[in-house]
Length: 255
Image 1 (cartoon, helix red, strand yellow):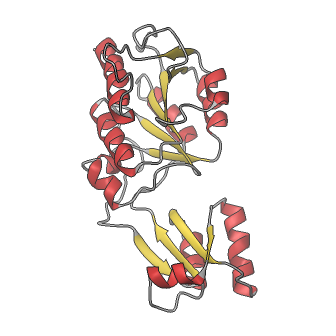
Image 2 (cartoon, one colour; image 1 turned 45 degrees about the vertical axis):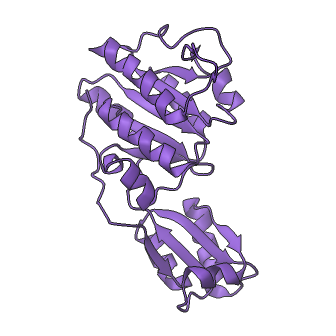
Image 3 (cartoon, helix red, strand yellow; image 1 turned 135 degrees about the horizontal axis):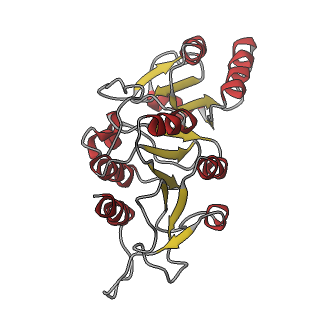
């Protein structure tokens, strides 16, 4: 079901730390994916101004922190800037969807809204790879860090499934709808069960955080709201388990 004709992730054992303003500037210019960036609060100077310009140009989020935090991260001369390079290469969903269609495949995409727990994220990616999901979309802000723990929990699936990191999930949702995908949100705010949609059609499934659920704008623009039937008293499932249940309903229908 899954197509592998995308850019390959280059496996690395862990997130690579770089420090120093010039080193971070050169990493950004070289196209490296920054997983997290910490900048000393109150930093000034010409090089820092150049770095800020690049951060705006490439839309890279950063965290303003006290110098003590940076000193705990590294004892070396960090010049007020420490960054971690992602262990994967992020891709763009706009590049992936056309390739799926061109190869005669029916897209199955997973959007993760505000899922910040690293182990949950890794488990979801592992299940998604097994289910033949073509791509996973996460927001730039409010997503789990892709670090060695995430890679380990995914059993290496993060090196196999394209991960797309975008500013605005609503814009992604609209692109997917314009590309012929139906949007299926897994939420408790409905009476319809996950079995109602026809997953043999091009489909994007949205999963939200266990505490907050899926954002209102994404819910409002979905084609289907579905929930997992519950027979017990707890009435809630771990999000990685929920993702597995709905994805394998898609697998069942497609087989």
